[in-house]
Length: 239
Image (cartoon, rainbow, N blue to C red):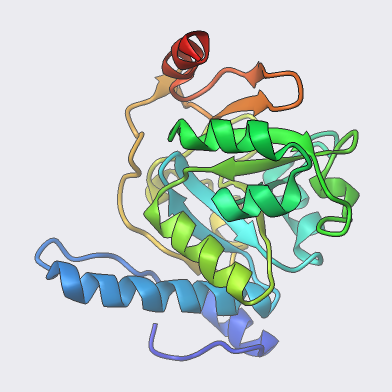
């Protein structure tokens, strides 16, 4: 993408029509790609701050991400998602330390190194939207890959939290390649970063891509069995 989005809503709309992609070429030098990588983080943040929704690759599959509250209703609509299911926050070690009340447990699960969704009580001064929380708790997805961590850090430095959900119709399972994302979702986002297959693309169940395993850090219970569930469960037994 050669043009800066800034905070111009009309620029975002034009970008949606163009449906610009960023893809790493097989022969790209690592140093050059790393520079492009950082540029993509800046561009994606700019689109989100202009009120846009982006599709980006996480290790566990492609995700819909945003920073503006106005995007929440749109996410529910395009995913056909029940409002009984809150959206999630993307984070890293510093995020969970800032948002969760139970820092000891959240840090323990983060240090396991597996991509998981951590559910716990949050400090109300950080999150106030009920569609991103439930019963006084919020879900923060951690260890989602290098790109996700870079985007979280960049956004935090700008004073923003990244929220989102998987890039699929609700109940359809995670998508590990852009080409598999449903047209009704694809056509309604403002920017797509296509980096090919995501890390855990081999994980399927009943013909659908598996979602992330989720753990309630307040009572140390696995509340959703997903990617790497067995490995996580075995580690918790050891611990």
